[in-house]
Structure formats: C-alpha cells, structure tokens
Image (cartoon, rainbow, N blue to C red; front, side, top):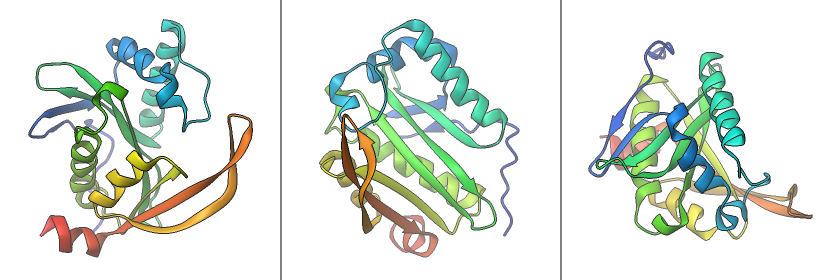
Length: 190
C-alpha cells in the first residue's frame, strides 16, 4: 500500500485529553517556556530558547521542514487550550518506509501521560498514512521518562550508541528504540 499522505493538508489529532495541530506562530510563548527550562534542556544539545525571536525562528524552521516535506511538528494542547508541549516526526525515509519521532513536554506536566497519548496519536496516523514499516526514536541515556513513554507505546530497546553525542560538555550514550508495523498492529492497531 503506497503512502496516502501528500503534505497537502496538515493532520490535526484529537485524543481523549489533547488537541494536536501544526506548530504555529502563536505557539511562540509556549515554545519559549518549554525550551528555556533547564529540566527540558538536560537531555538536549541546544541553547535555551529564551527570547521571542528564537522561538519564532524555531517555529519557522519547523514549518519550513513541513513545506519541504521533511517532517511534521505538532503543538500539544489540552482541550481547554493550555500549551503542554510539542511533538513531531522527521527524517521520513520513503524507500525504507521508516520515520523518527520525538516529543517534549513542559516539566510541570511530566508523568501525566501526555507524551504517551500524543505518541499514540502520531503512531496510529503514521503507520497508515505514511505506509511505514518502522518508527524509531532515541533518547539520551538517563532520560528515564522518555524511555518509559517509548516502552509504553510498544517500542523495543534495540541498542545503545556509546558516547555518540556531545551534550553539555561531555559525550553521552544514546538509547535507540524501534517499533515495527506488525508489532504495532498486534498490540494497538488491530
């Protein structure tokens, strides 16, 4: 079955507690709060997003990736409109039928299942609309919260890339996870 998504209309998801729409210019304040928090940056190799200009530039970059058909990024909000975080899919390899995904949640919302709920929404759509064989994700060794999300969503730890990234003045291990279409269908999708 070929991929049915053509980057025409951005997919919007509604889950039990969340509404997920394309990252937009009016998400700048939320993005600034998210990516200027030291707890979020602990496992990311990026400078704090501590100005409206940096947040706007980041949003424009994410939206540009969509326009170039390289990725999709959603803002995660409660049904009441409260900014919770963001998530996305990137590096879609059409010939190998795989994509990477990631998510970032405001620390005051950690442990409440929002990343898991958003990831389930992305997976359900992506396996069908993109005709994927595999979804993959990684996290810095020690990011227990992110690892738990991936395991809850059915991913398998496939290996550790030893000292493969430079973060905060040191090399860190990266834990690689994967989820195959047949595993997803067996557990979640039918």
